[in-house]
Length: 268
Image (tube, rainbow, N blue to C red; front, side, top):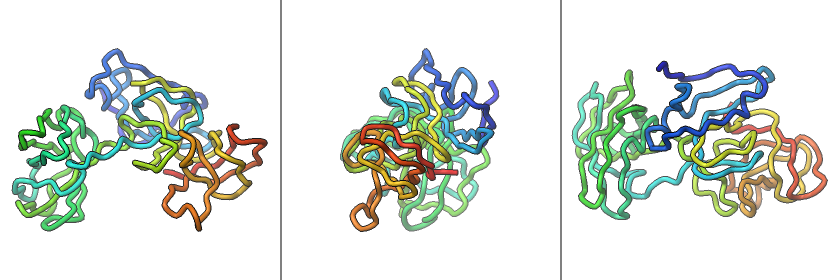
């Protein structure tokens, strides 16, 4: 099966297509087994609206915000690698034991490995999709080989003094924005109802109908709501400095809990 990378061009209505695979294992969540689309693939409609292919962890209503899965504290930074020479196609990492969050096979497929300190710091590497890494019992402090995507190799040698982190694909296992403090970045808004464990298109740019928390004012910025799951609310630079801005309102709203027409500005 040919795999689809990068950008595709869709027609009106394609953004409302969802797919629920019969196999909902982690491997199925990296590449749609029905059409070969890789999670994160970008789709542009004829009117310029932009979407990203995503995989849902939970049921999500239409016009609701979704965020990336929450980073794991013992895997997101400061992991100790084995030495890796320039040109290496994989990195061997030792996982810490606290907190004890085991690694499932290919959990970080199509995600990223980055060097956060010492030798090689500042570099980002794309993790392979299929056969990215094996499962691991973190309580045993295992050494796990992380395979890099074809074409990506270690650019600056890593040493045992280097420190690295793992980042899951931001569009894999997304959840509805929680309605409290954000625990990960908002990656888009649903164009239709989305079932748990299904693929869908998350809108990242252009005109959209989004669920509103409070009355929004035309042309003012909107942000992820910290009070209502999946919603947006007005952004104030004085009081909401730590909240993610996702676009701006483009018409008037009759009442809260209705859907606001807005222009999303998350990822063009």
